[in-house]
Length: 258
Picture (cartoon, rainbow, N blue to C red):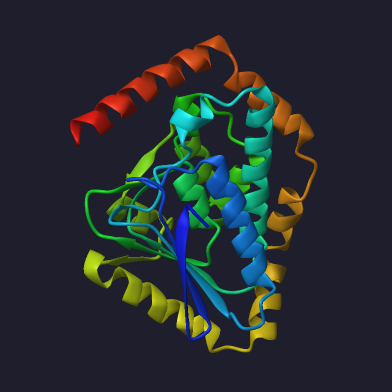
């Protein structure tokens, strides 16, 4: 796997995203994460999954620089596979905890909220779903997932304005569950997931799937019409122009830090 590192320790799989400076989500990462999460879900030797990033970034979200260059067929496959990854992660039957090591907007936030518990490093970081200002139509499945943690009212308001929350705001709103000093983030997250792992796996897993049943059913519904609308907007001239400006800004920031 080229987009993350994985370690196994006492029945716990620890996945650390490792793709560039900010862990942007490209098609390769989507496919590799889908494969490994499915594998862990059926591996009787693994009882839990801890997902983290690198210092300063959990994930900066969709790799816009790469995704902008996809042709129409590649774009459809990418977004289809991204929605599939969300479904696979939400349906994961074992404990999953996210150790959010830094910024986690957009697609990074989606990965984080698939987990059962979120610990975020303290600092001047942001997390949230800002797809609408970027020009990306929000799938109802992502709204349902956001609302699962925030409640419908907050999820609706935050999505419609593309709100990115500070660490403290995320904790106060319930988007994250705990704040940790960066140096103790992994230990804090591991301590939490091992409390889940000590319970009967059958009882814990079936209860999790029961509580997520409505959400899982929604994510398993036919996504064809949704994808058509998303792609139509993705290729709209105004969206492409906005993405181009964002990409130029990202490239200039990247060059300035070298």
